[in-house]
Amino acid sequence: MILEVNENNFELELNNINEKSLVLVDFWAPWCGPCKKFATILTDIDLFFKDKLRILKVNTDKNVGLSQKYNVLSIPCLILLKQNKILKRIVGCLSKNEISKIIDTYI
Image (cartoon, rainbow, N blue to C red):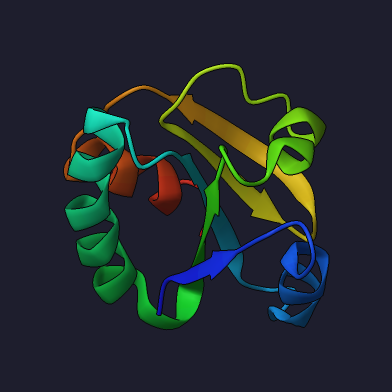
């Protein structure tokens, strides 16, 4: 299940995730064409990795503080976390297979 989060509930949701699970945070905006393309890819990735990965979506227009905290300078930006530590930052469009390979290296 992909969960839309904001500055008020981001830390709570992050802390509620099993510490063995990976977290993929999708920083996006409604006006971003490539971000819209990622929506379908992320849905497929969410189904494929099921219990091993949790996807959180952050609207950068509404959550500037989170974007600044994670140093998001351009979107789409995916940040892979484990135990609140950044493992990998992916900026720009990648294919489903490319993203899956990156996730696989950390599972």
